[in-house]
Image (tube, one colour):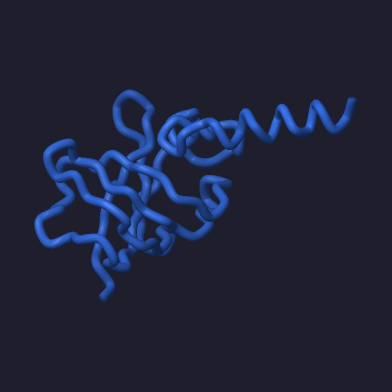
Length: 113
């Protein structure tokens, strides 16, 4: 019985897309509503950029301020963030903020290549 429950839980967690997980409101971690200073950011590797949709797929390290483990996920990008020279394979330093709707997005992003 325990194996069935554990297997079902694992199957459910692996079926949730990273974007849904990211937008699920990690508020239960007790994180601040928004943060945008360089010392609270993290680094990541760019996997994909969609400038038209203003999204970036990143594989990032842990974000302790939000209680997030390292993962790969899609992020929306704040209007002031320039995506012009960003390309897959770039290493970046970035911060995460909540938009007006409470959805996490990239608040600042700097290539560190």
